[in-house]
Length: 465
Image (tube, rainbow, N blue to C red; front, side):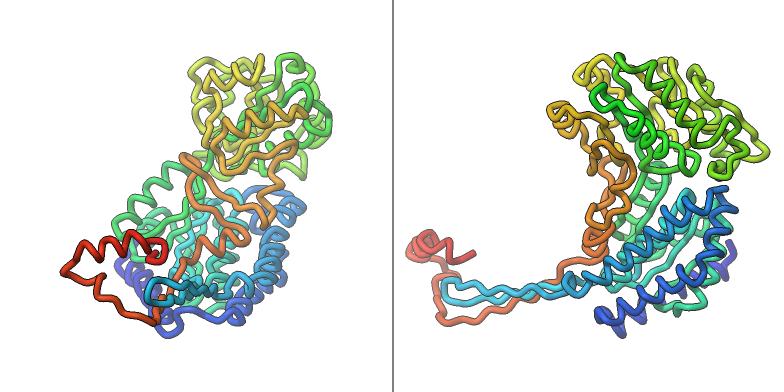
C-alpha cells in the first residue's frame, strides 16, 4: 500500500465525518431514500451480481438469489416498513422530591461505520450490515473480501456510481487495506470472518476505543435423535450442510446421531446426496466450489482424519471437493476442534444426551445449534446446555433469513447481533435529554449536611431516584 492509498483512506473518513458534522442524524425520510437506492442497485444489477458470485464460488443462480439477493431485498422492505416506529423518541415524566423531571430518549447513529465482509456470502455479508447502519443514520465504508474479487468489483462499480462518498463507499483491496482501515478512527466497526482475524480487528479497534460487532464462526452442532429421524430431516440437514460447498457460518458443522439409528442415517445421507448432486457432483450445476487455494488445502486435510463414508473426491485445479461424509474420526483430530467450513460432515454416534454433553465434544458457544427431536425434555436440555444466541429445532439455516430473529454470536462465535430491529439498535445508541423543573427548593441536599437532612433522605428516598 502506497502513501497515496493511505491518504485516500484517511481523506475518505474525513469526508464522511465532515458530512456527519453538517447533518449528524439524517431524517427517517432520507434514510429510507438511501435504502431504496440500495434496493435499486440490487434490482437493476441482479444479473451482474449473480454472475459475479458464481465466478467467485461456482454457486448456482437459485442459491445466489435465494440466500443473498432475496434476503437483502426482504430486509430492506422490512426495515423501511418499521423504521419510523423504531426512530420515534421516547418521552417520560417523573415527580420527585422538590422537582419534576422530563426524560427524552432518541436513538442516535454512531457516525461512520466500517463494514469488513467475508467471502463466503460476498453480497449478503457486505450489504446486510450496511442496511442496519444506514437505517440508524450512519455513513458507511465497505471493505469486501479479496477472496471474492468479482463480487467486490461489481459492488464497487455499482455503489460508488450511485452514492456519494460522504454517505457510502466501497473500497477494495487486500488484508493490508483492511488493516489500514481498522487503524483509522471509525465510530463503529462491523467485521464478519474468522475468529483469528476477528481478534486482530478487535485489538486494533481497542487502540481507538472503537466499538466492534464481530460475527465469527463456530462448530455448530446438529443432534439427530431417534424421535426426530425422518427422510425430511436428513434432507434438511444435507441441504444446510452442503449448500455453498459447506462454506456457510451457520451450516451444521458436526452431526451427532443416536446410536440406534446411526447406520440407517448414514445410508439415508448418502441417498440424499446422490439425489441432490448425482453420482458425479463435479458435473452438477447445483454444487459450488471452494473459494481459494489455501482454504481448499485446509478442508482437504480434514478428510484424512477419519474414514470416508461418502464422497472424498478432490480436484485441486478446479477447487472441487465432493460432498464428503466422515465416520470413525481419529481421537484428537483438528476436525473436532476447528470449524470445518467446507463440504465435509463428521457423523458421530452417541448413546444419550447427558453422556454426549459430558464428553465435551460440542462447542457450547457455537454460532447456532440444531436438534432434530420430538422429545420436549431433551430439547429443553439441549437449549439449556448450549450458550449459543440461537438454537433451532427441526430445521437449519432458515432462522438467519428472518428479520425478527437477531443474528449474532456469543463467546468464541463473536458478539453483537443484527438483522431487523436488532441491527438498528446495534448501529445506534441511546441519546438522552434530561430536564428538571423545581417546584420546591430544599437546603438539606447541600453541604454542610445535617442529621435532619439524612433523616429526610431516608424518609423520602423513593422520591429521590
